[in-house]
Image (cartoon, rainbow, N blue to C red; front, side):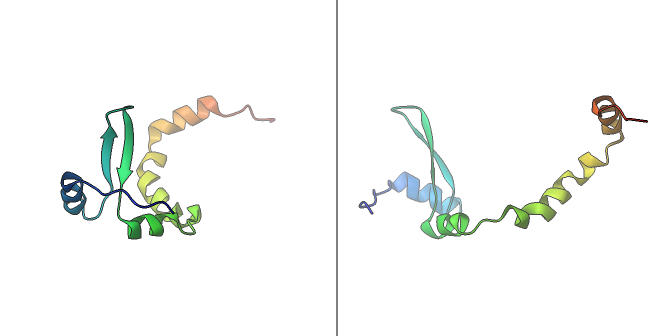
Length: 84
């Protein structure tokens, strides 16, 4: 592993204010956005992620949308024709 870069005081302050991150930084040279977060956060995010762990949160977040009666009209218009 390469030697880590040293963060600036401004980045450190932002990281602390964000409770460990992430913080978003703009690289002025190429206008690329970069994310800085603590190693412990990075490791927890990168280990054994299983999308199934998010199903209940997805269902809760979308429950109101799925039960919207206006979507019934959309679904009726986009549904394939029935064979009957």
